[in-house]
Image 1: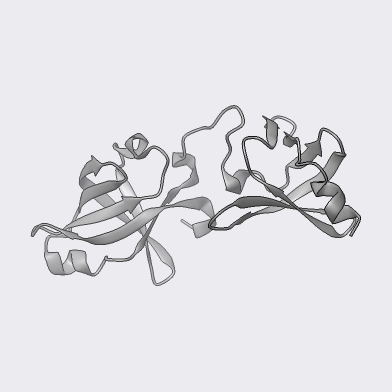
Image 2: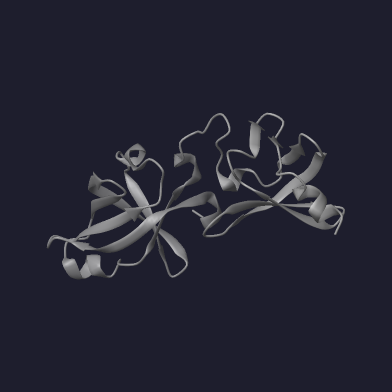
Length: 175
């Protein structure tokens, strides 16, 4: 399985107990949706290696996991700080105006005032704000991803309708 076919699920934090369990931090809005996982993919030397799960106990966004064939603290300790991935098809389906960042590049963006702005090139993730990066006539336009801005996500036509903050689009196009 290739990295582009997967999503980042979390990270191995440390060992847990004395029987080779690991403690993981889950990077998901609803960790409980993953309580029935049968395997995880650990990134080791830039390759995704599958590990089958013997047991998984959730505690908020953390989990205590016993992996098959990992029987000692020393073996578990080798996994500390490794990134965990899952296949994209494990993501829960979203509806309404919710979307995953990996699914919207290529979507058209239509503003209620300016009309068609262009297609989303990519989603830029910053600590304080995620942003759609769009190019129109070779000019970059950055639109904040906020509930107040996004009016509607139309998956069928691959279009996101927005109400950009006053003057934002003109600022980019007229500079």
